Image (cartoon, rainbow, N blue to C red; front, side, top):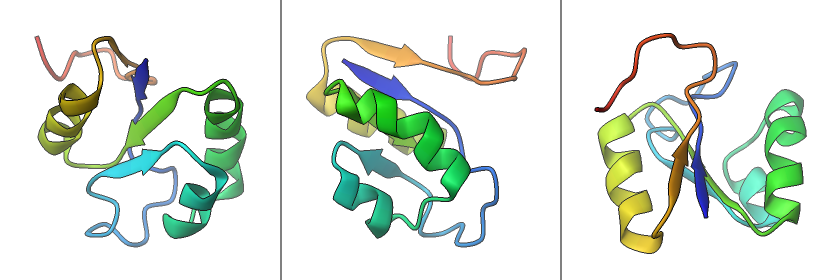
Length: 84
């Protein structure tokens, strides 16, 4: 299963954060995660769930589709769906 999240709370490196994939603790270092992001993503990674996040939703979805049969899109506090 893959969970799709949204852009980090404090995006400082936007081009580097277009598509982020988290499946190991090393990925948190690679993507310079904030404490808030780690608190959100670590329990999922601990369960073997791959998490995608970032600002380019189209590319995130394309990448996730390549490796998963089931995708859960968590839109956070967004009321409007990004993809239908």
